[in-house]
Length: 402
Image (cartoon, rainbow, N blue to C red):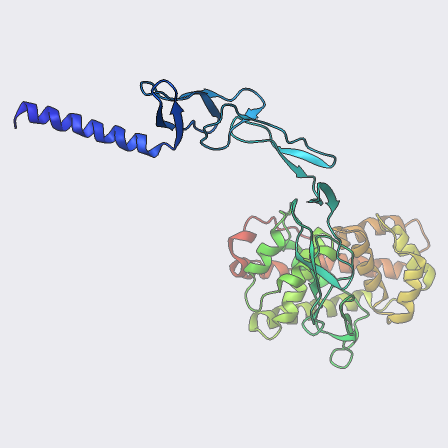
């Protein structure tokens, strides 16, 4: 190819590129007094201003915005804008003044901007839940709880909760819930014999305890619920368990609810049968002592931690059969003391009972229960089963014998 033609094409290509670049820069009209002509000058980019307008022989000269001044867009201004925004009471600086942006202020947590004032987010009253949480720019949107949902608190964050499914828990509705109250459940005596309201039995505790990690992670309960086979425990029930129970108790309550919801599955049927056998064995040891109020009060006073009060003991003696009274009081002690191990608490108590005039036969019976649950291997037999059911999430769990 002709060398002259090659050079011409290269120069033409460079010229085209510069033309495209120039065209991409915003322009503004400017009258040049030196030539009395109307020129199209290049604007200055964000963060700068026009220090000197273009002429027929020189381009626009731009200069950066000084401190506390800004220019958000391409412009033809002779100066930058002053960072005028001043944060008011109950506001904080979300974005400090820069060369390209004015200072941005925002209301503190829990408030929103309305007519230059940071007002507190509206709190939805009982019967209403949060349909849309408040933001720094908008107020909370409340909505009346629909059928089957309730809210019993005044809150700017809480949504309506679903009524407790008493049937799924194995109970019946004693008082139907409404927009401000949850369903009140009670033991369904028409279907199952009353068990004196014992929530988690000693045998269930022995089976469930190994599934509780030594250190619980914040999302442990959701991981466990998602890993269990069969009918899943609903998100509403999981949240309700989290709100009402301590960390370890949450796992017990979740597994008990899962067991109740899946009681027709063959695997769960076998677990229930073995728990029943265990409970029958425990009753053989602990069910025969006919203890007085003073005996039960002494037993409860010997346990560590928070005490089961005299009123609770009196109520237990009225509601429960003599064979169930000790089991009920031990259940109440565990709930009062959060994540305490019932059998360990009972072992501690027996050491102190020796100093009181406590029936020797009862002490021997309690020792037999402790020994039985120590050698009880039901939860070990089902350890492999549980690991297969809930996968690797439980493989790191440290198995702890009660």
